[in-house]
Amino acid sequence: MASSYDEIAEWYDTWVGTHSMSDDPYFRAVEALIGGVAGQRICDLACGQGRVARYLAAQGASVVGVDLSTKLLAIARRHEEAAPQGIEYIHADVQCLDGAAFAPFDGVVCSMALMDIPDLAGVVRSVASLLRPTGWFAFSILHPCFHTSESGEIATPTGAARTVSRYFVEGYWRSDTRPGPPGKVGAYHRTLSTYVNTLSNAGLQLERLSEPGLEVPRPQSPAFASSGRPVWAEVPAILVALCRRR
Amino acid sequence: MPATTNTYDKFASQYADMMAAQERGGVAPDSNISRFLEVVGDVSGLTVLDAGCGEGYLSRILAQRGAQVTGIDISPRLIGMARAKDPDGAITYQAADLSQPLHAHQTHFDLVASYFVLNDVYDYQGFLATLSAALKPAGRLVIFMNNPFSLVVRGHITDYFAASGRRFPYRGMTEEGVKVFFWHRTMEEYLSASFEAGFQLQRLVDVPTPEGSFKRRSDTLIPESYHFPFFTILSLAKAQ
Image 1 (cartoon, rainbow over the protein chains, first blue to last red):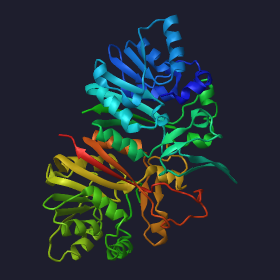
Image 2 (image 1 turned 30 degrees about the vertical axis):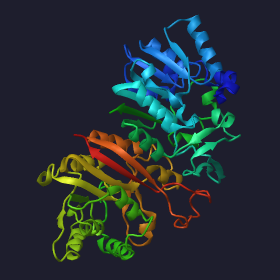
Image 3 (image 1 turned 45 degrees about the vertical axis):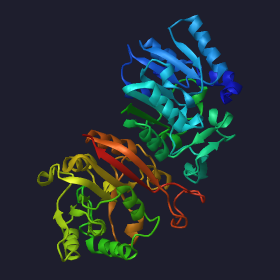
Image 4 (image 1 turned 60 degrees about the vertical axis):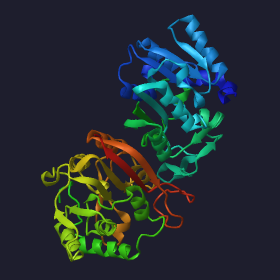
C-alpha cells in the first residue's frame, strides 16, 4: 500500500517548516495534555518526517515512529543519522498495526494526522493494541466542526464570514482552494460523534479535550501562513484530545 | 436582573403553552425527544432525576415509561404547573437551584436526564457537580443541549472563544413570547466540567437537523445547503 504523502513528501517537508515543536501552537496544545514524557516509551503514529518524534526524544522519551510514506521516513531517518537520538522508524500501515509485535507503549501520539487516514476505527484499534493498560493516547486533528468538505468564507458588507456545510457528510474530500494537505492530497471528514464514539468503543476513555485558538505570534512556516485570517481566529482551528486505555 | 439568572419563571405561562403544544405532538420518530429517549434507554424501574424539569414535559414521559421520577427546577411557577399536571402525585416535584448542592438526594438516582437545560444554567460547573453527587456510582447522566459550535455557525454568536460566559436570547422562543436566555460556553468547557465532576463520556450524538425544519434567517450567514447539528446529546457515566 502506498501513501498519498509519498507524492508530496518534499513539498510537505518544506510546508511544515523547521521551527521547533515547542514553537508550534498545535503541538503545544498536545503537549499541554500529555505533560512530561521523560522516561516514557512513546509511539509517534503517522510520524511523517519525524519532527514530533525528534522533539519527544529530545525531552527524554524513547520513541518509535511509524508511517506509511517511505519518502517521509527517508527524511526522518536522514535526521536520525545526522543527529542520532535513538529513534526507531518503522514503515507500516497504522490502520492495521498488531501491538503484539511491539513492547507495550506508555503513550501513543498522533499529531495532525487522523483526518488524513481513511480507516479511523482501524487506527484506533491499532492504538489500543499498542498501549499498556492505562496508557495514554493523545491526538490533534483539524477541528471537525469547522473544517468540512464545504467550509469556507463568504463576503459580507461587514467583511468575511465563515461558512460550514456538509457536516454530516463523512469521507474523503479535497479542495483546490485549501492550503496544506487538504488541498494537495485531500482529507477524510468525520463528525465529532464519530471520533468520540469510535474511541469509546475501542476502550479508549476520553479524559481531556481542548480546542485551542490560534495563538499570535505564529511560527514562520508555510503551514501557518494562511491561517491567521481574523475570521478563523474566532473559532477553534484544531481539536486536541487525551484518552486513556481502560 | 442579575446576569446569572434566567427568566423562565417570569415567562412560565408562555413557556408552558409552548411545551403543551410540543406534548400534544407526542414522541414523533426522529424528533429531538425521540433521539434523547433512545440514548436514555429503558428507564423502567429506575429512580430518575429530571434535572431542570420545567413544567414536567420529560418527567411525565419518563414516568409513563415506568421510572420513579423526581423533577427539580429553579422556577417555582413551573414546578406549580408541573404538580397541577400530575394530579395523582406520581412524580415528586421540587423547586431548587441545581447549581447549588442538593443535600437531600446524595447518591440517590440511577439516572439523571436533562433536556434542553445545560445551556440555560449560568453555573454549569456547579450544576454538573450537583448531578454527579445525586447519582449512584456508575449512574448515568444524559444531557440534551445546544451544540456550541452550531451557535457560531448559525451566527447567533461571532467569536466562539470571546463569547464564553456571555448571555444571548433564544431567538425563536423570544419571537413566541418566551423571552429566555442561554449562556455560551465552549464544548471544551462543558466537557472539562463534566470530567471535573467525575463523569466519563460514553457517547456523543450529533443530532441531525431534520430536513425542512430549519427556516433560514436573512440576517444569518448560513449557506443554503446548511447541514450542521443544532443539538448534541452527551451520555455520561459517573466514575466508580
